[in-house]
Length: 143
Image 1 (cartoon, rainbow, N blue to C red):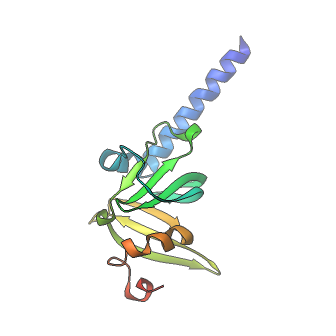
Image 2: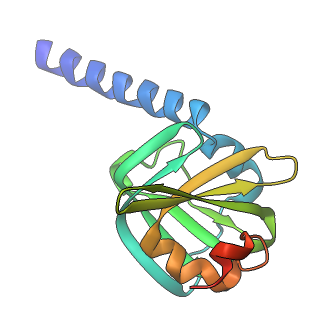
């Protein structure tokens, strides 16, 4: 009996944590407009660390660079309240590069004025660069 209550307690804590993450981050806001209906063809990067809003997802995201947009999905066990997203390239209005020593990532501003943000790593950005050339600063637009 106690084991059952313990398991139910852990499940409730896990669901509450996912709810808080979806709320604090921009995932819930993005899902209202950009919920993916299907997984489009493209180049995919698995088990990536990215940030969506204020929430960092360490080695929990699959990121796709497709003709239709940037595809994001959370690994299956963490998927409740985090449906897959497909953000059209036209909705990414600004890109800023962040550097620290040899490490770099890119901050993508969604909407104008900005209402959501995503941070992706350098390898994903290299694949997405051709789709985002119009919104990147001049010095970053060339490889």
